[in-house]
Length: 489
Image (cartoon, rainbow, N blue to C red; front, side, top):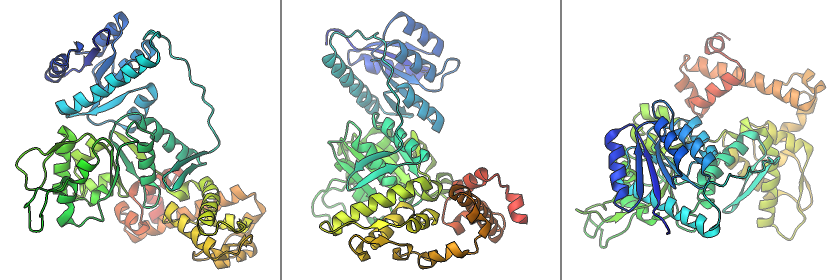
């Protein structure tokens, strides 16, 4: 390159700041270091830095202030944010503001080197694409025209969002995909955590490299260490040859750890070391066998904080992986998506099973029934129900509620006559008002029942409901319900 890459390191920890600066100087970078945000902002007013490595939480002017100012002044600068325990809000704001990537604390020299190397490569790509464009050129505002619905193809299935809640999830996933930040996804079983994780990989710079999903609940505890870290020849009975683990397989790509809380705590401790220094030691080995560069995405259907309390999830590992947290709301909380998902899966499975026959249609009653169902199994349950209906339907027929393999589907027609104990006065109101009033009454009565059954214990109530406590609190907040009132109902 024509001139050395310039780097600004900003951290109030003297040892960390000077260590990072000296390490980067060893690679020939022009490194400048500051201990306070105000002084870093002064430096930015005087000159442009190609790369900034900035602590997110600084006294006085924060890392977010520096990020915002740097990108506004020099749109081609790459800002890497160092962070120990980011909040959901700060992660979202940083991505919106244009952060290049996150560097979770504590970190190894290897991790720092990998991220800075990527930033250098991005700068070289920018210069090659726009050699005559000065780095201080103002960024052109991007047109924002939010669509009514988002449809993305991920693997065999579509990622479809009509509801604002899921559109926000996909928008965040798309933004975080541009970085190498670790992501922690939460949500009930069947909400699509793996689909979102795969979407992040497919939209990242790693998309041509391995995508390695790992179901932590499906691997026996006795095999987990060997599966994750590999083993050397003779490490145990039956180890007739050396084998690389899933961590090495994911090198260069993305490793998805599904149901992380089901992983044994001893393996979680060993995984934390890999996250910190990127070094893998196989079972039975006495040396470093590989250095791994992989993007980590984890997920759980549990409440992470409850899992930590129950010693199912290491707190330090959780915060290491939770650089960008993403929560996927259950399907019952986004009924707008049910109509579109139903139509999508009807076409999808009909094309797969019966491509040469006329596709059937859902009746209005069928759509109303699907929207009214609570879907404890979420999108996975809906997908299976629609596939069942496709298999038994006649070509070109109208699919009625009775075609669905769900309790009460065959009696749905009675609802128009006041079945299911529904207040008949609701039928004189418009659909959305009636549905909202009926749902509010159900959620109030259901919460009162499970809280009374569990003697007011929220964890016990969540277990009865088959959801995490966060979901119950969210419903209570939405309906303006207090636990004391529910217990007295």
